[in-house]
Length: 167
Picture 1 (tube, rainbow, N blue to C red):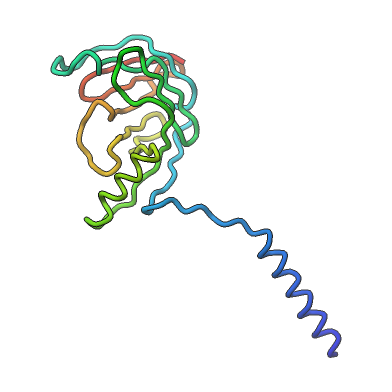
Picture 2 (cartoon, one colour):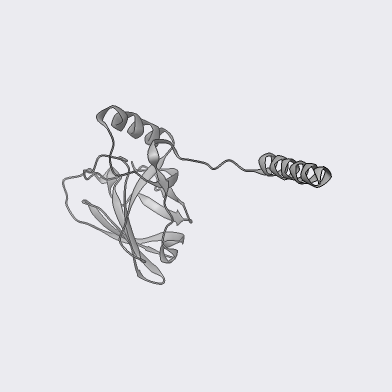
């Protein structure tokens, strides 16, 4: 009887040891952020086709800024046109949590900008909007909405431009 109890306890310790040594720690994003998955219809590489200016109050260096936009499961890569001022490089989509204290708001914003996070807002299976300023919700040229028109065409729109891209 004692041998069986000792064998069970020994087997339990071995199983716990293996479980602890092979366990993988979960990655928790800082400031309660949640990794966002882009809709499948938006994923792919999109090339600039043509664009329309919505308002003329903005300098031309900010208008029609992107030559290519590449969207993956969790990231977006912007390729700027020569001489244009806009987002450039790879950004990751992270959804901010619902509420921040005043103390944490600026720290979270600074962290998100440093690590190139964009705050997405889901609009269904074929559209999403994003903000460069992770917590502040005001319009700027680095904010936009991506919408799939059909399987080969996408629209990037913000307060200033409406650009069309082709897959």
